[in-house]
Picture 1 (cartoon, rainbow, N blue to C red):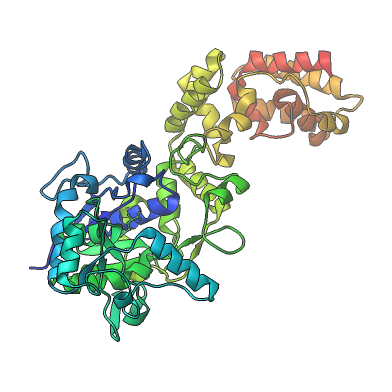
Picture 2 (picture 1 turned 180 degrees about the horizontal axis):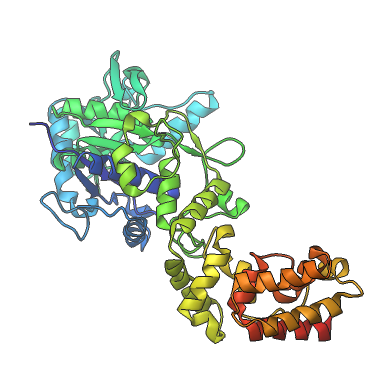
Length: 503
Ligand code: GLU
């Protein structure tokens, strides 16, 4: 029987999740669900100095909002817990000691002053200081010292670190599902620190120990971790463990120029960079995005279905997703496209669902509202007339505010162009036609007004332009007769009369 797929998303709680992190979580989630596997959240909080209060709760809330909750993790404890590395502290040292015993790691006592000295000294000579096979015997560690000297230092409680003994003169072959085979000359690797005398493991040790103990089958993470892959593979080999399969996702790139998408790009370009807000930074949720739209655009950042299809529900993504179709090269972020996605999802919603959200938006934005703005039936009709042009629920206000309040001013430029000498007369007549129209629906009003225009050989433009201006305040909006019908006879006639007094 093949092993059950188990993947993990392993953020460090050093701040809010960037949408790149959400994409990593999403790809893990999709892969797990596609293969009937488990999606684990593991909090990698071994670096206490970088710990940020509230970051873990933020991560959980963001995943939930996106609709990609974890199966196992903090608060959802299963057999593989605990899921915070700080609560697993006691587990790691034994593995570091096992590596020493097997000859794959060693104690190092070099003080930070000494190491700084070497670094500076190398820099001055135009070189980079690397702690590895070529100089480790000249430094202070259990390989250069005798067993007794080492023991004396340990007994005296001297600070130490445990370093991995990177092999010399070997070529290791790494396999990445996305990038294929990668060959590395071990001579370029440094002897990374695995464990510190304060009792804390470093990222590398904790990460591979936990992936092993949690029976992770596939490690799907950002490209920035590719340089660690050789060390991780060597650690698995050294501990005689079967390594999981690896997939390193391409970077998400700036909308313009070179480099990785950053928080600053969002600030400059006026688009969110976080899924939900963090302090002053507005998130996609607060900016009015639907989680389905966010998931959809993130999925296509680096993955392609191999067809022209762009719209995918979460279940369609689960069905279609494969790591083999993730690109190697960076994915350029396009803020305009994210709006396009939101537009698509907004159009798919029912008028009634949008009306609910729109009423909530209005209630949040204004202290007092006319009755019509909280009337579900009326708002639903407004939504049906204006939603076509909306990307966000908040756009509905900009597009349809005149359904709730009569214009208080009229677009000046348009007035100049539209308002002719005989316009008041024509509008007066339109008002009269509206008053006598019994069945005040769009089609009847339209046919009555148009009949009058044709009978009197008037120009359509000279009537429709000013009429729209009077009703809407500008030359925008849907079919004018639909607007009149929804506003009703009394309101429509009232607006014409008011305009005749003020323009
Ligand atoms: N804690 C690492 C991070 O913050 C995890 C990297 C990995 O997935 O191995 O991204």
